[in-house]
Image 1: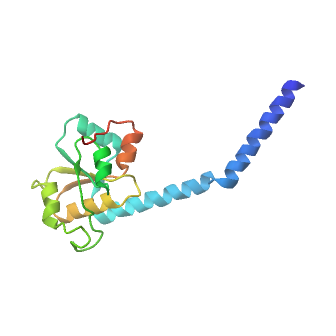
Image 2 (image 1 turned 135 degrees about the vertical axis):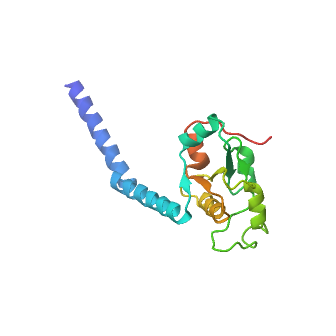
Image 3 (image 1 turned 90 degrees about the horizontal axis):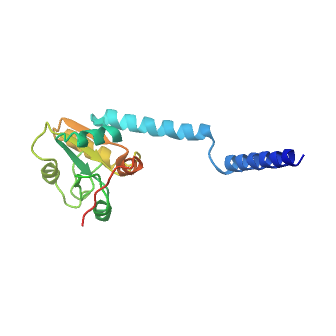
Length: 175
């Protein structure tokens, strides 16, 4: 009898917690809708941008195999790059415009030539551009402009530093 009462009490507590979580959180259907919206946004950016994407595991494999890859970090703050970035990534210190024409007012007076200098002269080289997380559009803008400038092997790493850390891969900082 005591055990049955204990199990009943546990059942009531579990049902109460489930009801509480449902009342104040998203249900699985709402969560799926959000995932769908994010996936469609990403797919449409890729289609418009004319670049491809790379997963966390694929980027790590390229790096482990010592492939000739230029990795560009587009995180918005100098301090975030200094604190942590994908090992070997070059820092991109200015915002990349989300526009049809380059406007130095939007880039902190940085020019297209400044961007080309970071990307280098080899338009065949694989370039991977990332930001913080999937919803961040800085990596999209960077990939679009690299393609506009004639770079052929441009990849966006949409998961960015958050996915890299989520995979428990080592990050690099600046001393």
